[in-house]
Length: 85
Image 1 (tube, rainbow, N blue to C red):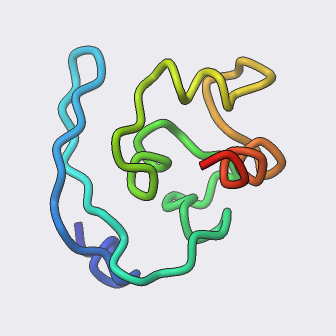
Image 2: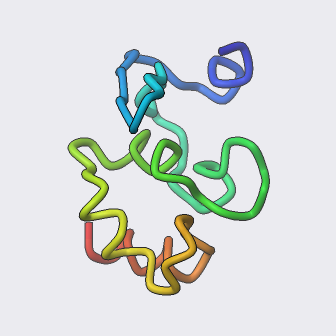
């Protein structure tokens, strides 16, 4: 949670995915570029990371953005999702 606060996040939200419940936070005023959203810096965006900036994100919507169906968004998929948001 410390790293989220360091990056300017606020407003806690619970996300339930399969058997895991994660508490994440919504962006306060941080830029919504790929590297801001990629919280763990693995160069791909998970559904949980994307839900931080896309309120109401469903797995169905995420899968529509995930063109190569690898379960993550790469930078080009993320940019396309941002255009369609």
